[in-house]
Image: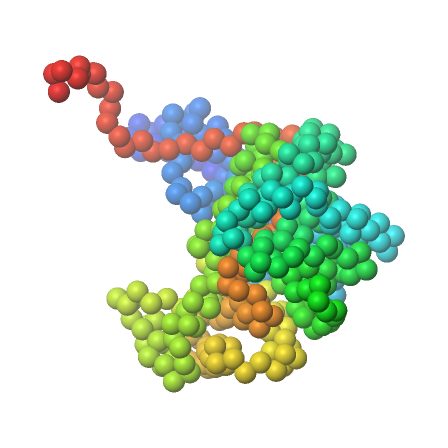
Length: 435
């Protein structure tokens, strides 16, 4: 363990049935709560801890992302997410997560160029993709095609070679928007668009999604800026379910393409990456602005199964700092497009009420990043089935940075959680004829 994490603090655990005690070291990070190092607990006591969901268990040492949910703080390598979203762009944040520091002008030009030159995918991948049913969910396609990348780029699957790790990392960040756009176009029955080297990361993605051969498509800078901010705000979020999945898969020595595919599969779960899609479903259920009071009453009723999606957050107990950034982009996009969509008007009215109603204020149910991102993506023209796909495009950067950090950690071991067994004790086998 690094010197910065060594400490003289200890915690003593006592087995009250025997009186036996064991002293465990306490480690401190640069910021955040201390952690009790329980690695020797089982050897010393014959017992291990029980923590379903790992909500009170630190699974790794990481220098990438820090979250303080009580204060509404999100830092990447020490930089506030608000500053990064306002002053940076997505590829600069990607460089920061991968390399540990913000790039110089020369470093950024070189990195941006490397990503741009990797955006094309092997032509045979389009044949592979066409094997899916036309009505396949875009996340199913993205998960399958990402896992298949190792069959096309097997020259960058040696996880012990730093050069191959770097190439695989850049390939994944570069090609994920191309694959996501291909999945979208396939669902529409439209031809795939090749990436354009003269466009930024966000511009290129929008072009691949919305351009058609019949006419020129010009990317609106307001939409591109909103897309870039959505990517930045979803780039990494500490040890969430999909990131932990990537690390657990990677702990076995699996290649990076397989690990990212595992992360995509985890993200697909409605409790994780589907929250912004759930916001649109909720708005559809409410239906009209006049119905909002009824549904707020339903939300207040603990016996009513209705849930207000897009308000409050499991991690952020005060406000979601990402939502503060995306709120302005949301209004800019709606103003620019001049959309008079009843669903979006309903969303804006719900947002207004949430900032004034005593129930929302008392419960600290502020609009979160999923609320605004869902509205922006709908306004842009994306179907809800693509929402989690766009989340995956952004989060690939965080996944690959976490994977790289894990591979380089000398203390890394294969993941092997324990369990509390509650099945039958050992019993004798009974011959089939005697049962």
